Amino acid sequence: MFFSRVFTYVFNELLVNTLSNNRAFQRFAIRSSELVQELSQKGKEQSSTLGDQAQTFAQTFSREVRKGFSQEVKGKQAQQPPRPDRHR
Image (tube, rainbow, N blue to C red; front, side):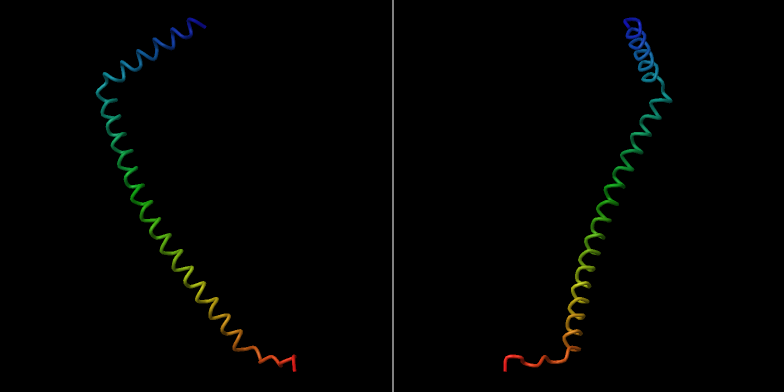
């Protein structure tokens, strides 16, 4: 157990030191970081755009459903014959 921990510690130290001093890895890390930031920004912009479009769609859909329901009710009322008065 002790040797396992020592080996892991030494291996991690060597790996971190080797990679941190490697110019190619540094360039890779910088490019990766910039790419992630760029994609994150684009994702935020797309999310905002889609949110606005979804809100507009929901409002239009709701308005059209109410209008269609209103027309349907008016059409049914016009088709019904007048009811005879039963209380006479």
